[in-house]
Length: 527
Ligand code: NOJ
Ligand code: CA
Image (tube, rainbow, N blue to C red; front, side, top):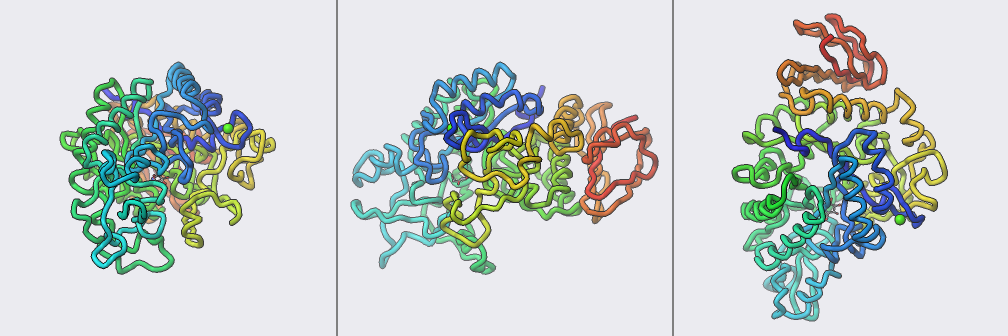
């Protein structure tokens, strides 16, 4: 018996950028609801929506002012309920983004906490005295640059923030705060949400003694400031697993829900987040594809390593891009983006597809005066800006791409008149068509949705693997180069092409030598 979150495909919606329903240039919940039929057509199973809670939007919703509401820019609790209802009617699950590591400074908990040292909520956040001799309590750095400590004049202490000063970190060692957070989870679970993606899950507990982080000697001024030190004491502390187990317990009070963790760690450390007896996150996000060099030997080694370290019974998952990292087509180019989606949708484990990647949205130039990302504003010139990955979904070739009736909050791509759903959904050679074919094929073949994975071969250019489940067996051959390649088919049964990344060759019989065109991936099935 497999769960929906194992055999299904997740799709991340960045709500500001999916569909604007009221012409303010910002996407909203009614907009998402209007586009559910597209998601059904595409063949995805669940949407994860980045934060929609009331927020001053210093970090576009990752600064939550109320865990149990909806920001008016996105709609209301009524529009949320309507979205859940309609999604469920269409057999789509809805996963919310839960941001438990920090709140907004505008959250009433923090307002109380900073009021006085004796306020009952003081301990819900992380307050420390200055270091001996003055200055911040230790050398920890904000992920968005600068010290992670901000001085509060009126109470004479520093508070800790792993991100902006407007995002104070909560103290997960405090039991009352934990209980309040669990209630917030129940609030949404009762409303019918199918699970959570938990923001920066590996950050939740910090070293009890707040020791200095060790410096990274390889850091240069061209790197983000956060990389000056290793995050030895500020993240991934052993006590975090008990906190996650607590959240999992709450999720377990309800049937058929999922807990996903955002965790940027090497796979050996990542797998600890499945938890003791697998009672941690169902899916600790596997982000390795975001940073592994895009070449057959590296990707092959990565998949083997991940498969090898997964604990018994743990379910794998793969992510290709998200709202924090460059889009896949921007990183590997438009041709390899097709190989990338074939990889994502044919590996073993739950795939997460980022909205717009099915259109192959690539590089978007963001002029300096329209930069919105707070990190890009704080550390200009490093090329770390996240706006290019957050531009509006492109639905058609009309002004504003069918996203809005007015200027969108971020620009469209230069090629949106061709790169949009309306144009690409009727073009059998488009990447959109490819994604849809792969998703539908995946649904129809148990070898893909839950079969075993076995490496067939990898060399400097090609990665080939097999997926099988009982008699159901398919082969995937991916050419990571811009040259033609040949691959020797070593199988007793006859095979034929089921899907090519180029949109043709369907049904073509495969002889002993398989020829791949430049940047071509092929899915082969028994003939
Ligand atoms: C990770 C989120 O994905 C990112 O967008 C955000 O800025 C930080 N966490 C802080 O919440
Ligand atoms: Ca709107």
